[in-house]
Length: 98
Length: 208
Image (cartoon, rainbow over all chains, first blue to last red; front, side):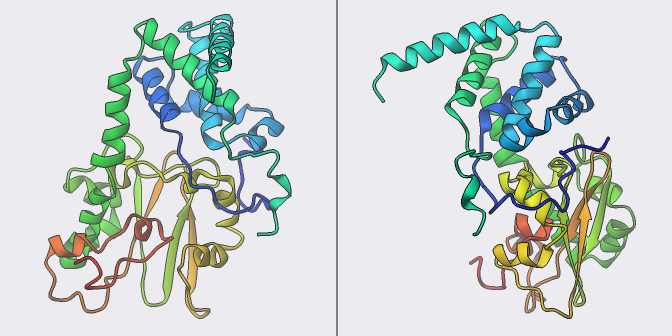
């Protein structure tokens, strides 16, 4: 399928970034081992990302997007649960001085 | 670089929002008993440290010392690599391309980040980044220069685009002066990047 994921030859992305986000990688395995998706479902979910989101987010954010979507589809978590927990963590974060 | 204008968008910088999403997801999955954080740590550790480029380095050193193995490796990469015990997820179909005096090979996956896990471990972040994926195929010599690899103009550069089904692996040139070295000593000269083609093996004497 043609899409923005097909990056060969595109220009203007600047220098190459080398930072890692291990937890998303680990969560990928968690969902994979739990039988919630296979690699093709995972890749297809990333390729369905809207172009503007794909381009403005990092590689592991693409993974996170797919993991969230597939775990919600598979019934492991609900969108509402995730939103609620994010709000909780955000509130907790504000209380602690950084 | 001249492309600093989009820093504000930070397309490769993790946003705090992303960190929150990751934490929320891991917490929920842990509470539901769907993942075990310690098991996740073990997975990351295994792929980062145990399954790693050393497997690929062994393949390269064997090919340097055993001409019959090298012939098998170039004829059927998957099979020859499996001879040494390395196969599995993300490394089922391997094609080995040989660097020579006249050809330098490098590997990219323009579509996502396809990479041979059983031989090289996990892909480095730059391999998965938009700049590498997009530029490797239009300006391979420029990208190689950024990695400190200067390929003479009269040497051909071949760029191989890996995909979900088939992954390329570069057999680097054996370093000059390494004739007397054992397989174990040769392994030490083989770097991860030399098997992606964005680097060269260490020169003899550099690893000691």
